[in-house]
Image (tube, rainbow, N blue to C red):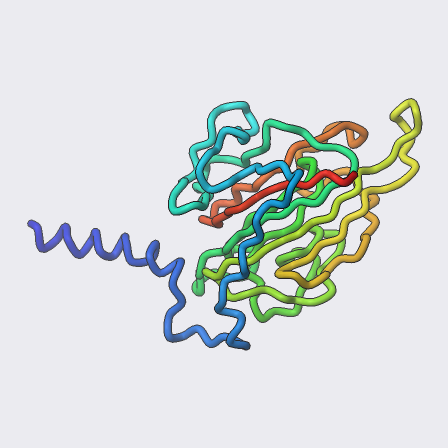
Length: 240
């Protein structure tokens, strides 16, 4: 009986372990692609949203407590748990820093590899995906989802830590808050490389965003897309 149970346990555990370790079949394009990005500490004046220890500043979208996996200074999304959002909402102009890594899922394709997203104000998604070595489209990693592709693919290999620095300017409305006079503007640095430069986003809500009134502040949202994507070191620096 034990001889039947033990192999089953090993078989179920192996894929989970392999998600964070590249195998001999993986061939990096450059040596630096398998080196973690250097973590950037929060500067003076920043609001630390996730320090690897506390989940107090986050909740599920339905207001219930977050139950993502918290270990070794990072968070891991749990399939079926649902998206999570900051309790605080943000407006105006600010810089959002986040570090993430996508799992190694060589048997999956396209949107089935390490899919997640970071939604600024809960409405504007910067895609998270394993797009390593691909010609980037507007649904690939670092895309402003379904609107603009990154101007180059600077993804690191799956299982390797990466970073986003997102410079965000909220839309401007008239005094009644009804007519939009200036669209959202987004600049994105992916692993330190500028992949969007002051992009004008005319849409008020990208795919699967929270929606709501774009004239009002919104939270930072991390998407549950059914993949064990990990996040660490998330902070926001309001502009003066």
